[in-house]
Image 1 (tube, rainbow, N blue to C red):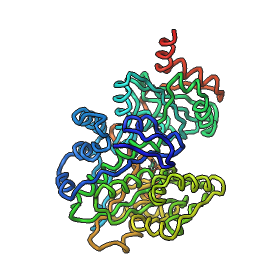
Image 2: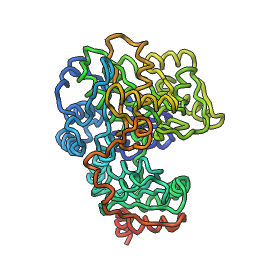
Image 3: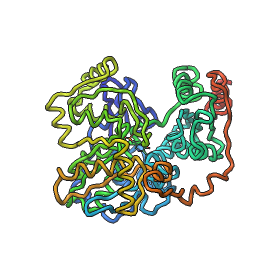
Image 4: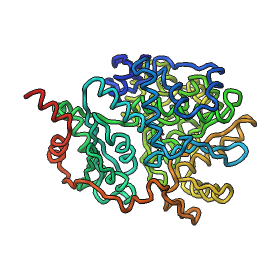
Length: 475
Ligand SMILES: *Cc1c(COP(=O)(O)O)cnc(C)c1O
């Protein structure tokens, strides 16, 4: 299996290199040169298998032999043993046609764990094979830091440094990060804002000698392996509901377009998917695109579903690459126009092609709260605000779909991650699941640092094991 960049000029790479590279050297995103395809019989044969076995079958073609099947199976089993639920991503029925796919049973209660638990282990495996170490550095406003930390904790060849703005995350968010006491996890409480944290991380990536000395890397949302890991649960859900002999549709609460692009991949691999519904909150750039064929940037509005508060969906470029006939030069042209003018437009034909697969819906704050309330009242089921955007979008889309379709809404966060919004809508405060019930009494470890690039760089250099081995080699 080979991977090509959406911008057409970066080297064609195999799985291991794509895993470690993240972004392509030409600024593009890696996609498979060709999607592997499963026959209806192969999909039918997945029925009743455990999550980890379906995961191995779905992902193996993407590895192109880079990892032996038995080794890969052990890595996959270990990754999903960290989930609280035997089914890993269980389905819950809301009404005759609508099901919720719970993706929040991992260590940090959000769907990013599904991909990151595997990604951390794959990094470690490939680095060990190569005798290399990396240092992951990232900034968080509180939402995504813990998933990256949980993915990297105790990994032999990875050190992770996460900067958060001191005193500006919620206590739950901070504790989910700082109560991980593994020796390779370093929480930095920066005396500054989230933007200051991001600026420092960017400056570190732009400092070539520093970057090389510590083997700087990231586990960001454009990494191909994250998409690959997310394709799996579209298969497990669809076969549980009768695929390939029954059509399913999926509704995905969308931010960076990574999750719903994985659904597009599952469809390309032969899964019979009738429609992919893209759920947007008030930040509706994608819903407007699917209405008009124009992607146009507007300022971000804060909502109760912060992980979907986006101005640009970075993974959309992967879909655009296909819409533009897999012509990297055309993608470069569209992206340049987007940067310069804040908008680009696809042709009527290209929009029509996108609409054979996708539909977009927007759900505002009032609609989100009303959906949380209604789902609680009618189904005795608590949904977080992100999932509520999905539930409302699915209801809006259902009338235009076949009568026998099964609609699956992806639940991307546990309601206890957003207790205030859920309590406001329902009068019912969701409880943290048992694995986090002692969060408030756990020991914390973090380091306060000033908003000073040199100080942060010294701190990272003195603790990153990759820097120590580099120094030994030169000595
Ligand atoms: C990241 C995230 C999303 C958005 O997913 P994308 O892959 O970026 O579209 C939605 N909901 C929650 C809770 C998230 O953490």
